[in-house]
Length: 433
Image (cartoon, rainbow, N blue to C red; front, side, top):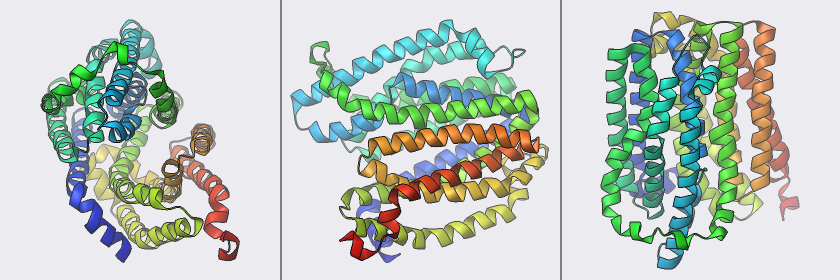
């Protein structure tokens, strides 16, 4: 415990932790306000539609930007003192993402009716919302590009402040749209929210406007495309496939059980997302840099178990309190209409507990650049999550099957991680030497 506190005090809090926590809390509060507005003005059925659109938007935003964000941050931090290499990196990333974004925009705009039929039932015509998404997508891409540059230059404070202001702006507009236009307003807010932040990000771009002259077609370098490829593939699983699987599961619930039940499941996943944001932020702030510093098995084992001993008791108490307070949580976040969500907490919380156990170990993949391990385990998780969801939904003839599948799939995923890191975590010290 002391090591964790000392590390945060000496390294993390000095830099960005306080602002990062403020950013996460702003995001959570914004999400809670939006969820409450949807519950009051639209209801469970509308929440199901919003969930499908949100997942679609997230996936296609990742496709448009080619999943370059983390790679750009990493390589800018390495070459920022070398003007020529920086120009090659920025030029390559900008034009590759530009082409990709244009292709995605045209696809979404001209295939809006087809996409509408995929993510919404045929008697709901929201193709115009898809076209709005296609129009504003370039602003999202520019925003992510700008964020990655500021992050690469370690402009943490301005980055997080922009994020906080942007979140406040997005939530304010979302609440206004939901109040005035009900379901249509909610759907429009989903597709424009992230793009609106670009208006705030312009401030950061003005401070770095000298970099614009570095972006040149003749400086495009294929070597940087090769370097970015692993980041694109990893983003494909986490940012593209997982949301698409969520759409598939939610659509299956709509078709075989009903709209309201799909909305209840979406409500449970939203509540889960809010409290997981805090835990995952702490893990990202502490574990990833710590694992990057560790070079031997003994230290890795010590760090994992030390983190477990420190965090798990707090996590167990927190999840238990959430379970005991579930009735009031549902009323605060949503409304009485969502009372069936209370029956989903048990399996969702158990699944989230195992998910956090898994994330702690899985961060080693990123820290040590274990590319193929990451890809294969994520592929296993995606396939397992979908197949078990369909199986248990049919078995229990209800959405309880979806949260049971969440627990089962992450338990299996955790089992795979233990197989990979078993010798590191449970091997005898004499064998480690």
